[in-house]
Length: 284
Ligand SMILES: NC(=O)c1ccc[n+]([C@@H]2O[C@H](COP(=O)([O-])OP(=O)(O)OC[C@H]3O[C@@H](n4cnc5c(N)ncnc54)[C@H](OP(=O)(O)O)[C@@H]3O)[C@@H](O)[C@H]2O)c1
Image 1 (tube, rainbow, N blue to C red):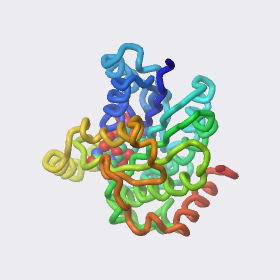
Image 2: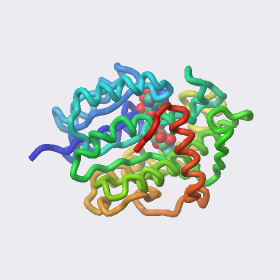
Image 3: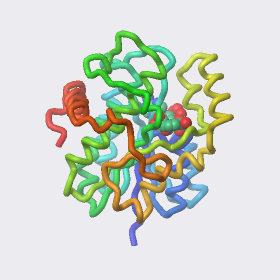
């Protein structure tokens, strides 16, 4: 029997790498994306230590660059004919306002627009499958978020925690809208909060003090990456999860997300904003 194929974004560290390792252990063939080839090669080595030859390859994709994502998806479409599971895991937090080449604030670009473009380009492969799954890694940070369509891609006043929370609310709005659009198409789309997890996400693009605050918080409150990856692994692989679609999970338990995330007008508005900002004429 052919192995199932999982493609995991941002699998060069933290929750994504652990998800890749755990899915390899469950006999998935693994493809990953990373933004740095050395880190991607090292991740593949760790995946292959679990099961030799499980790590099938990596694709370089910087989610802060539309060009880079498009190049990656073209390479993926040229070299993989079949994907069972896409885990949209790559994510980042930025201590100060930074803009992409395309003029989008980076937290929104990397955490929301990147997966929006990436998923769109891979839908044809996913839809050839008998029962594909899309798993979006969101966060409980979204409960504190608001999202103003006229401000979100280039906020007048930038606040790092607000920008991060907003981008994670966007992950959930995207999940709900995409799952509706794909109704009846043999594919499920779910999202999750992995818990507070001991990773370096809060240290990479933040200042020394914020990084220190994150390290202290994550070390005291956080769970291990193994525990953090368990929800992604559950939604990607478990038989029970096959029944779920258009849902939010806290670790591996279904939960209600924020009231705002169910707002259909906001879901539609975010969807149209995504199409406008990415020049995707018709997503589906
Ligand atoms: N840690 C938590 O407590 C927590 C809680 C809720 C949700 N999450 C979510 O979990 C996901 C994984 O985060 P993590 O905690 O495991 O952090 P992490 O260890 O920093 O992993 C993030 C991954 O995304 C990649 N990435 C960052 N910026 C990127 C970019 N511009 N283009 C492409 N890839 C990029 C990173 O690549 P590099 O290895 O090159 O940095 C890494 O592979 C994120 O979506 C995050 O929002 C985390």
